[in-house]
Image 1 (spheres, rainbow, N blue to C red):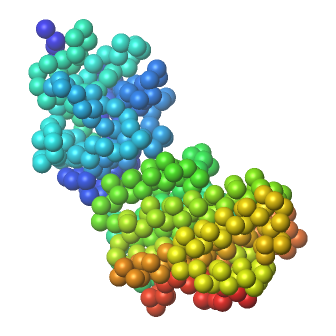
Image 2 (image 1 turned 60 degrees about the vertical axis):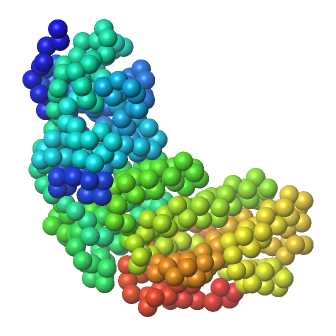
Image 3 (image 1 turned 45 degrees about the vertical axis):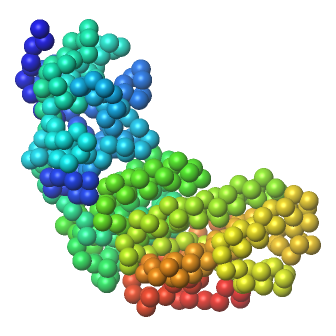
Length: 457
């Protein structure tokens, strides 16, 4: 007969939310660990032999989790799901999407919430791993059965003692934010938010990047930033803003979906703005450079716009960061007029396809285009953003959608040029204006130096 061991106590470090009772409540962030036999000081993580299996294991492999209606690994961005099986014990598995949205807290105890397909459950089964000594598999326990041949402890509860509370009145996302204009935008958002018309309470900014290490390092740098410290802008210093990292590779559809799923499941009431800053500027010019540049700066940025748009509150903002190189003064009159006459994203996409086809034959200049992949991609983004804004306005949406040129900013993309240009914080002023300040309801515009400008000149 299996012996019933003392309850498993899981501690959450740096807890940041009130008790969670539904998928739309504020999320809690931290490490989950056990402190009772047989899992003394073991942490929730992926199995060393099968990354799809969640286990309790050594602290050296510990992960952090966002815990709300879903439970998501910060290390891998995968979600903790309950497998659909016929047995009364349901294996826990990692998945690319949060299929289980029933997680919650009752006091400090993890449960599946009332009204879910599991009912209100709080018992877990913990079984010694058959693969690796010192690791333990987890199951949601809905009956008295246990896996055959396994050494398990029955009817365990897991706990997340809450040490502090934080809910967010405003939530924003900045893509490509580990450096350059994106990093400057995150800093300026935190500095300017207290005096913005958007301010009605605590503010969460998601800093996203395609490299986890660089993204997390960027967050740490901002937490120690002298300007933010002096202004007492961040929560840790008594301010309103908090900055968190989330993985996003703008060139990956699955990564875009992963962030969108996280935002939907963690912030059920919606988010306030997205600044799409991620992009690339490649050296050289050929068909491959054009294909890669258009894919990132045009196609994937608009794909991300469509993914995030349904998550925005009715008065939300979408800001696509373009470039002064996206102005139409480098094109033939025919191509310029095509851009200006474009009413839909499909119209703009047809121009992008014609450019790529002309480059394939080496006749882009004869076709009325400059030999500049980055410039054409940003012209496409401006046109696509205008078309998206027009379509949303026709639907009666109150979301304000604009593109902007940050100006000539000294970044990794421009450092090979002789002109130094603006600082990243100066370049961030227009995107930040469009995200959190009063722009008098304007949508579909192209902005530079904090005002709407003519796209052609």
